[in-house]
Length: 219
Image 1 (tube, rainbow, N blue to C red):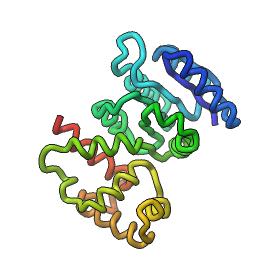
Image 2 (cartoon, rainbow, N blue to C red; image 1 turned 180 degrees about the vertical axis):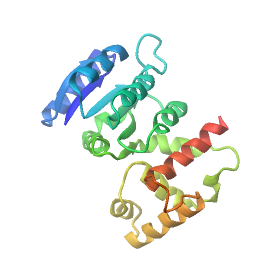
Image 3 (spheres, helix red, strand yellow; image 1 turned 135 degrees about the vertical axis):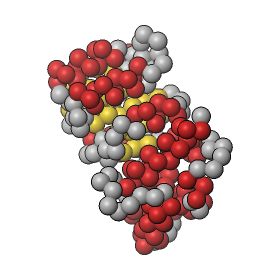
């Protein structure tokens, strides 16, 4: 796995590079600005780009803008965005541009090495990884009727774990239910969110995106 890291904090940038190299992953370049990140992605053609949300010059959404541009230049590039806080508009802007190879994690997740590496590998394999804290906070921000109100509490639990990128067996283990029960809940979620089995998208990811889109319209 070839990786480019873009983070303006030198300590975090180099620490993350050391962590990944210790796991025998190939960090081909590091960058401190969005322009440097895009140049490195163009030059090295990595499998994954890890970008901080807030980078120079304004420290607002430069990382998200760079992530979207990187995906435009290299369709299929896996992108994992790191943020110090839950920033809903940034999450929906990033995730709304595609349904695979994307992740949005809080920086504190990096310290939980096993969880972080699992998310990185999932994104690199074309899946998604949304931080569970991001999912939890987004759920609590719903202020009026949306399609998510159609879901039962257990279906919301299942959807939150789907958003983290867990498969059916892992969800069953987390919720201490059978895989059959999880499969039944997921079928119900797809039906309540109007996701047809003929849709040419990953319905698991689309369910999460549908939720994020509803919340974006509320804010």
